[in-house]
Length: 108
Image (cartoon, rainbow, N blue to C red):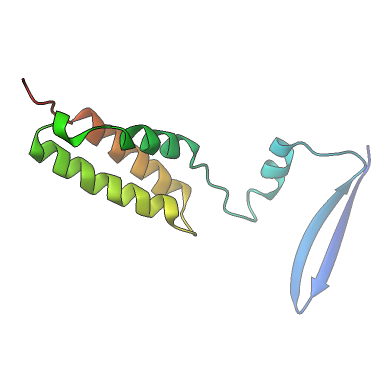
């Protein structure tokens, strides 16, 4: 396998490309360009958010539900954010997990 580095200059910017004589898989592409672009993984947060949407407010006491609703609104904002960082995703996930576990069910 041969690797050839090609440097393109355009308007004073330098973009570096590595050309291989084989196809890169997704993991190799992400590893190669991790320093160049912000790759975030929202999957776990999206799944938890979707699972939380099916919870029913009437099953929980008002105080715990109010906090939960606020956190859900914040998570929705993070998920919709265009330039979100992985740190923001991780923080939102942690807060949502904690708040969901803190929900107090009504005693019937």
